[in-house]
Amino acid sequence: MLHLIPESILVFITAFVAANSLKDLLSMKRTSKLLNKACEDREVLHACSLREIHLLLWPAHPQRKDIDNFFDRLRWSRNPEYCFRVGLINLCERTTNFGLARDLLQIAAAEGHDAAKYALTMLYIFSGDPKTYTLGISWLAKLWKKRCLFKCRRMIEESIELDRCWRHGRQWPPSLKFSMVCNHLT
Image (cartoon, rainbow, N blue to C red; front, side):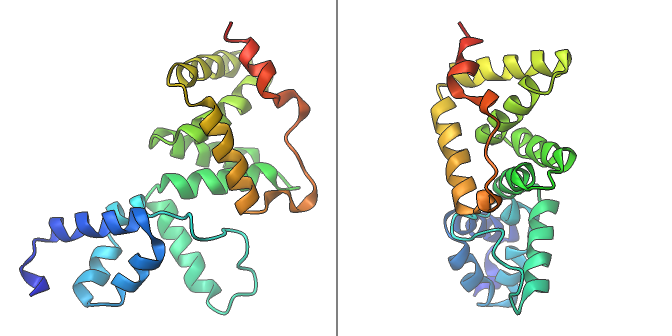
């Protein structure tokens, strides 16, 4: 009976499930070959919610290869939540890879993730480069007009807490205080 549903409708329904629950998506994937194929669609992976999982807690997992493969597919699909969280992880690691963090945050921001745009804004403003400073202030003003700065900051803090990015005791530089950034807007 499932084969009578057009593939585009199946992908749409599967993407809706993916956006709400990774657990339900994985259950759906095991149901049939058609649903398994739909679950692997780029649109579904792009919409996939990662609220239910920690991205850093998999080093000794018996299915590590499958998990890495899933994360690679999320990156390939340009999943904004994955790119945002992994970008933050790379910012917070002791051996910070700012290039990778910036690239991942840029992907998430381009896909419409406001908190990723906020994190990029902070990087741009405090980079010391006049060009990125100007861009950062411009983006910050847009986020301010959308009235989402506090929400973005809360999302960053929740993501950092969820993925336990501070496990090495690292913290945001003191120059990133929210009140200092808001002074640029007035």
